[in-house]
Image 1 (cartoon, rainbow, N blue to C red):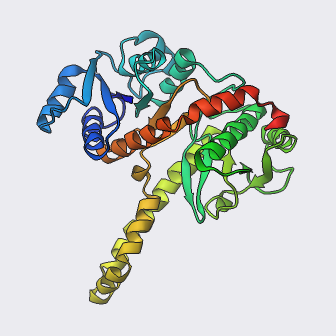
Image 2: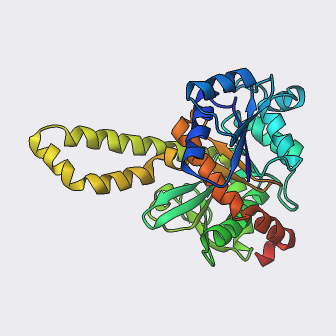
Image 3: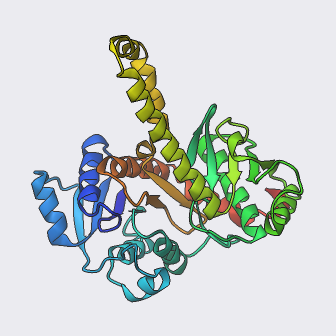
Length: 335
């Protein structure tokens, strides 16, 4: 398997990206990596880390799409950027999956213009699995589409249901629409229309859900627009850090609390791992013609490493091909 990585995207690029790739190949067999970006900068970081394996190659580009760039203009004018070249290489079957921590708006624009959407899907969506009491729930959309039409919520539910069935073997995943209350008539006009469309589909739609119900594990799929999803995702990341910072303070107050921490150290590590977004690394983009993972803009090398391994497992499962086949034949009333 050949994994394409945007070496220049993200706040900590290219060092964190390159060092994450090094960690990934050191930890996992089964794939090679092609780093796309400035060859001199990438090569220097590889040499700094005394890395000389043939499993990491370099594809030189001399342009970078920054977070300040206007998405559509950047994709159209920066043809030799690491992001655009990465997407083109994926389209040309020069790689099996593309990973980027770069400009989210530009990535979505590039996905639409270069790779194209799956038949029957209006907009691609970010789909992270967030921790719950009973395992995890799919949050879709988590940042690509800040304003949605009612049909988009339905389509998120459809591709999310196929993904959860195929990837996690949940036969009849439950779908909830994030709202300000559980009552049917809650929300603005768009949300009300989305509720009606979801209700009239053959999805296992359980109705509106409030944010607090998601970590309780009451649904398998939480559907929302990208604005709500991204706020929720970032809030959960902040809560995780807040909890562990406070626990560290509590357990370091005195000798007794330090001794107590030793008794629960193992369980605390497990809990931290579940709540640490860097453990998940990246998020698959669903609804496009290709395997693409989006990483956090401030990703560390640890996060990039985990994203690469996650993308490897995701791509190896051929999940996007299964979604593509099933969405082609899926009508609203038959999903």
